[in-house]
Length: 314
Image (cartoon, rainbow, N blue to C red):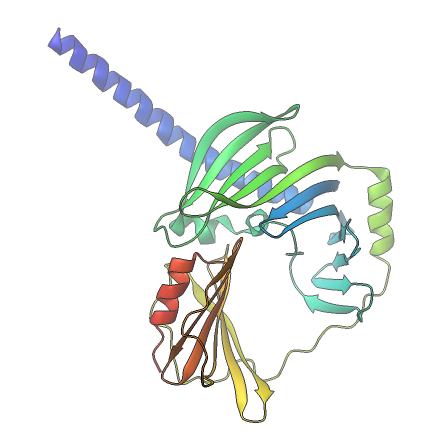
């Protein structure tokens, strides 16, 4: 009896192991298919962006016109903010402000950055888990979880349309598996003539001028960051004058999925030592060290932001 029980347990273990082994490539392939669909298909998507302090209705159109990506995003609330992408140029239009353009590969506002992440770059730092199938309304969807291996950053749950591979819902989770932001699609239309004609017209318009970056894009700082979560690298640095005798030195870091900046200014008398703010994915943490104010701003859990700030040496 014990012998047969041992055989049954061993067989069950092998089956579970094989299923788990098979599910890992499935999750990875599905993640790549979602990114490819979001960046290459022609579609219109209406969605809601939920965060602790806002609910933003958005209409997003995307297509490839003459081998050039063309996108349009319009916030459907009272602001009527519009963002247009043509190739590597992203332009912003908002009532009451001058229009301007920036260089970029995709529109980042309101869209989850995970849609544009490079799998090969983030793979060493995240586990991709096949979490099965479900439905959103009448649409069957596939579920994958993207979990930080070292618990130093946020996690994702993705619900992906089984047919089109476009995202249907994206939940951003903190380290306690609580949802802190959500992207939820209301409707999607593929290959619409109206959408394609609209994007074709957008591809012909002249966009506003590019904002010029300062020439000194890599200044030398008298400080360094001692601790970074694995995979985070410095991607840029800058310095800006705030007042006659004050300036801010900034360095931007990214792991290919999340970004944050370290900002250093001179301390003012009476400034509080600790001013943490957490709003969805965005954390602001401030501390003072050696007459300097260190401010971490970006997509990090508060505990990680505190570690980064405490590691800075002058």
